[in-house]
Image (cartoon, rainbow, N blue to C red; front, side, top):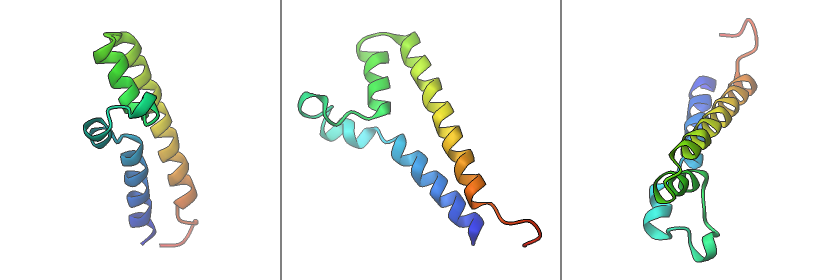
Length: 84
């Protein structure tokens, strides 16, 4: 059961960080850009401001953050030694 919980937790955290389409369709940044997410900011930098290199660098930073969060979650939820 612990493995299933770990997978569900990792997928839900990554999915919430990578949320884009709902915010883009409904709010487009909201009033005075108060509802910007990381992915929406990367989209604006890459495809609205045409700073493609900067957007790619931001994407790599986001990737490193997601990998670090996933590794932390896996470490916290791993099974103790000798328990199957």
